[in-house]
Length: 92
Image (cartoon, rainbow, N blue to C red):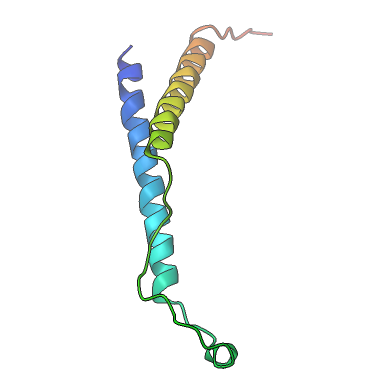
């Protein structure tokens, strides 16, 4: 049962890694972006002056993914524990 108390922490850590990776990749893309000025000179438009990093989504989606990932990891840990405890090695 002690292992199952660590499952929400593992799920939270995986979500944190996902958010940090998403932010990091988008931040690097923003830093290294160079517009193609030659193509843009023929099409004069007002450019956006704000930068958005990441994506937006429904906050409830993150709650569902947290609960789903927690359940998946808990099932996986219980399956591994069951297989480890009920495996018989024959001496053939």
